Image (cartoon, rainbow, N blue to C red; front, side, top):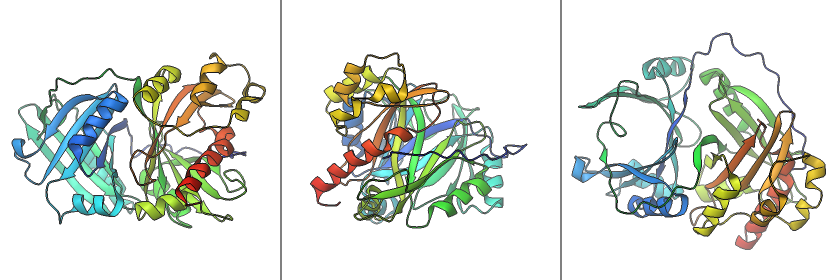
Length: 377
C-alpha cells in the first residue's frame, strides 16, 4: 500500500483503562473442512496439535481443532450439518475469522463495561467447568459477523478449555518461528471506518494511534483509508480499513465483494527471525506477494542501517520500513483460500511500533497485480 504520510493522532490516554486486555487468547476460523484445514496449518505453518472437540467429546453439531505455536493459538471449526450459524457463515464468506478472542482477568466485567457503553451482546458471561477448573467466556458483536470474545482462564489448568480433549498426533512438523498475534486488520464498507473507530473508542476504550488517508494508501488506480486502533497497554491493535474512490476497484472492495460483507482482512503474526520464518514458509508452499526488484535499489537510503543482510530480504521479497523508534521487516502472503479474502502478514519489529507506511505503495502495486490476474482490478 503506500507512498505515504502517516499521521499519528495525539489523544490523551484515559486515566482508567476500563477494559484491560492481556493480549489475544486465540483466533477462531469458521472453515469448510476443519480436519483438512488443520493439516494445512500444521504442514504449511508449523502449528502443533493441541486440543479437539467433536462428536467423540459430546459435541454433536460441530468439530473444532485447536493448534498452537508459541503464544499463537488458532481454532478451526466446521459445522457437521447445514442450516446453522457455522454452515451459513462458511456459505456466505468462505473460510474466515469468526472470533477474535481476547484475554482478560474478568470476563464478566469486560462484558458489563462494553455492553453498558453500547456494544451488542453476543454471549452473556458463561462459566465452562470441568475437572481442570473453570473458564468464563463472554462476547460482543463488532463489524460484519466478527465477534470479540472475552476469555477469563486464570482458574483453569486444562489443555485449552472445558469441552476439549488433548489432540495427539503422530504427525508433528517443525514449527516455523511464529510467536503471537501482532495485530488484526478489519475491512469495513464505504464510509464505515469512522463509525467503527468511534465504536472502539467509546465501547472498548481504544485510541486511534495512526491514521492513513487516500493520499497515503493509493496508486494510480485504487485507494483505501485506514485507522489503527490500540487498547490502553498496546497489547491489542486493530487497524480498520475502508475503500476510497479510485479509477478502479481497490483491494478492500474486492475483499468486500468476495467475503460478502465486512470481516477480518489479515492477521499479522510476529516472528523474531523473519528470514528463517519466511524461508521455511516458502519451502512449505506458502506464496507471498512479489515485490519489484527496483524496491530495493535505494531502500537503505530511506530506512538507514539494518542488522540484516539485504540479499536474503530481497530474495524473499521482505519489505523494510522505519520510524523514530527503529525499523520493521514485513511480508504479506497471497490469500490462503480460493476466495481473494483472508491473508497473513509476517512481521519482525526491530524497535518500530508503526505499520510500514513506507511500504504501502509497493504493497498496493503488488496487490493490484494479483487483482489484475484475477480480472478484478
